[in-house]
Length: 207
Ligand SMILES: N[C@@H](CCC(=O)N[C@@H](CS)C(=O)NCC(=O)O)C(=O)O
Image (cartoon, rainbow, N blue to C red; front, side):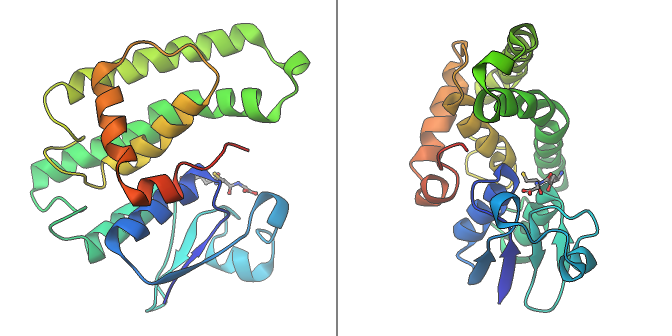
């Protein structure tokens, strides 16, 4: 059986669990990370020398870490015709939005998350927060313009491309920030919220 290592409130584990649920895969998830610990044991480091979650072990022993790589692996292996775009151009577009989440959105949102959720109000740097909020607004405007032309990141249906940015979008709207008007992102986010897998595995209180 597929094993997913990682606590359920990690955004990167949420990408994997949402994928697993969309694909209907039998699995077990093991709580490790933060309050659960377990990332620095020799056994865990043998699977993932970074000591990070998510890490998966598939039923044939294949180990994959790095959340977007895990999403791609599961979509490629189990999601032909659904999460995995078969056409090379659509797949490149999906890869592009997945990488964009890691290289643009995550870099902006992670410090805001730490400041607002894990830092005492008196210790927050309000100038840095304001600058990050503005950077995030500009970044989401890029996705908003893209979603004017189609309901999902790479076309008419949910694909792996929506998963990392969808997880980040939940986090973005859950953070107490000024959010600009993003009509196409809001409509896409409403479509994601109609999915049970998204509600169950992504819409988890920030902590
Ligand atoms: N780029 C990696 C980041 C992995 C990462 O930093 N994961 C965090 C959780 S989101 C972690 O392992 N934190 C240590 C902990 O939870 O104790 C990925 O996308 O998988």
